Length: 471
Image (cartoon, rainbow, N blue to C red; front, side):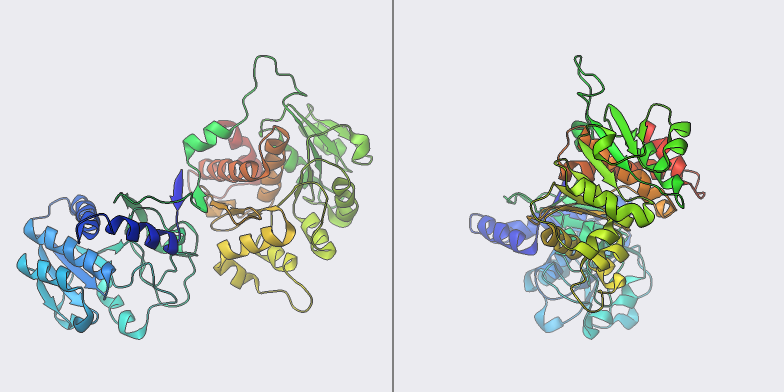
């Protein structure tokens, strides 16, 4: 599992460690790890051309010390200083002692094999200031390696409020930063390399599951399992206008680990024709039979509100998706009902967050994905799976996970229906709402990647089919 810590948590851990270590030890560890990654990227260090972009403070110091280490191995290292009068003096002295060339004028520089971005550290807020933005041209002269965080990206949120550098590789120290895992910041980070420097950190508020984590969470039937002990998921989806949504949601539900799927709705004939193993009915949700979770809303049309009310009147967890989200936005936060998992995209999130007047702009919510997911989770007292370029799963207590899988080819009609069904099945199989949403996002994204392996457009049905090979 990848864990990401806030700037405040990192600063506190650094302060505690530096109080116990000789002066300069922590920066030395960071610079050594950074130089080692740079050496691997260069392949041959001797004779390589390296450009260090150094701002003031410790971030610039890390870059200068790493540049000194590369210079000692025969690289031709030059440093471009943002503010010569405020540069890290120890790093500057080390670079000069190793034979590095220092200047404040970027006009004399040509191309480089590798550029180190040490302009702004993790404490920076907002986009690059004009004096820092002038170095951006130099950053495009070779493979760009960001020191801890690409300059201009908010470390705690991933928000990019102005000019920022787009790295090929980011070398982060001690822990990942939230801004490296959440878009738009994640799209600026490139490939991530973590360098351990000995920090003692508290539990992370933001994590990202990996293959082993998902495998450990997936429900596996035991020797005494039967279809009912494995859980039964109910799907209330589809309408006369959108019967395919029911078929797709059921397809996802069949791959989530529950022992049986019950379908309630007007598309019963279409569902059982495609999936004869499903138990179908056309009446109320209560009349459909006992379930451990409901999925409500995909393609629900005008009947989504009634189905949502029926699900909210019961005791089992409810996945609220698509048209049911629109209905929930009209009703507002629910209190005292069953556990909810909301699955909005940015437009639906805007409606859910409207409190009179105009809704917030979907674009603004997308640009602040982590903040948006947490706001929704807190307001509705629910787990929220906010879909988008980075899918974020948030709990009301502020803990969140980001999904590392996925592909832009998943932006296709019906893909969300498959995800909702999969999520509901994982809930019915016994996973907590937070784990079910996280695992569903992971498996759905991985299935999308495999379906799109040839780089061609895919359908939601193909995503559902590929769920069978990512269990």
